[in-house]
Image 1: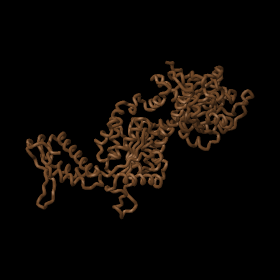
Image 2 (image 1 turned 45 degrees about the vertical axis):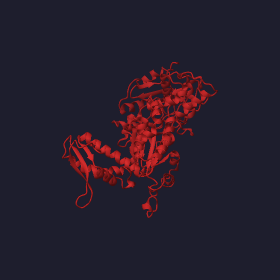
Image 3 (image 1 turned 90 degrees about the vertical axis):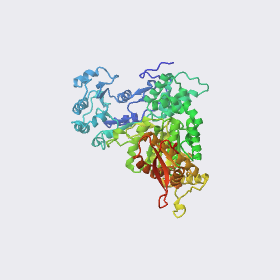
Image 4 (image 1 turned 180 degrees about the vertical axis):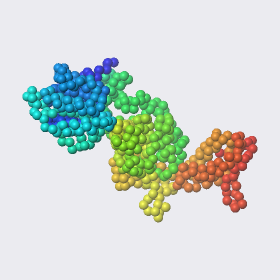
Length: 630
């Protein structure tokens, strides 16, 4: 296997003919003759195409900056950061060190306070014989400290840059009139507004992420990091390099190099680049989506899901079709974004309380073996614009900015998971825009600049859209009824969902991303109601036995009456059955349990009373009188 190349010796022989200089390079160069202050932010810790010498390959930020200023007859590049202090760029003439000493500019010194940086700035500004550029790195950290003297620093730089200066000596006549200062910041907004905004002598420049052409050219230089690939067809290597470049959209070249290093360390070839990129993003070697255990479970998936979700056979079948595509990696196979978009997307629509949330949790357990891998967000809590910050984080300067957003934190913590967004129709329009970006690009960037990837997540929306029509005088305003066959319910709800996204939410593009993945749930029929009732009743009896060590026995008559009370309203679904069991059984039984001791048996019978009104009655019974009826 090839040894990984040292990071300072990138191969040059395969570099693409593409030689467009970075946009920030051109903007900086054109402004250098008329401005002396620059705030440079964005992608400033990366590698860049050498615009002057194709044989140089890709250069660091410092090297690129040196090529630029040196080409404008600036002979010294001084760089200061709070760790290494002041240093002279390595390619500058070493004899300049004596000149700097004569101006009392001491290399290696760390300017720890704004006053010291102000003094350094003054000394560099006064150097007329040797054109010099000063880079003040990590300016954002300096500005955030709000240390004494900070205002004086920027005020000095602001004022002095406007004072007329005499021409340079003839030896330096081609250089810019003033020695430029380059403030390298996370964001221009980190520096004082009064210094940046409206300052004609200052230029804000944002270094963008590398283009597709840059990424493709750089991918070629990384070929030696990968084991030899047995390409059988002409152009196969180029196709793999193109895949590498395409899937690294919004990544730096430094990140691409790290991905190549990871491939080398894991012994994975270029034909496995998609897996390596996923490993880099998630930090996980094992991909649950490719687990043989999951494939085995998927063969029995219908039995697993129907064991928890009752009376929704059609919804489960359609859900399984979508999950099969997700597990086999065929979701979005007809598009060009298959590797970046979420593994799958579903919209569960239908009556309330019929198992939409339960099916989402069951799907999570099926896929990842753990129901806690389901991140649930109730969109009724995200109806206001201010709630957007809860998902993606507060803007800089606002409370909670350092904590990030709930959605971003969840995907970073557990990239292989299910994201459940309940009642999507209630979400604020800005949150819908966030959903659109997730479904379209498979990623979002939070307010701190960190990118979260959803390419290994399953997205599930739920909605009650389509349950009610516009005319209240018909069927109590219901658009669908329990008596409607499934195909009618599906047709009505699908149309209502389409219309709602297009005309009410005005987000047809979001509906397009969801596509035909709308899963329509039925009302729970009588048979399913009975199964749900029995399941909940058994669960209640089991809890009492475990927690209180008291056995419960219910008569057939009492059980039949309780089931009738709890299943009489089909519109409330399975959740309504649970609520009625709590009202008619759990609440009165809790009072009776206070008069029982561990080991007792409590009998539940039907008491018709003197008025003829039936109610459940609870009586202690001998422990040997027979097993409990559940």
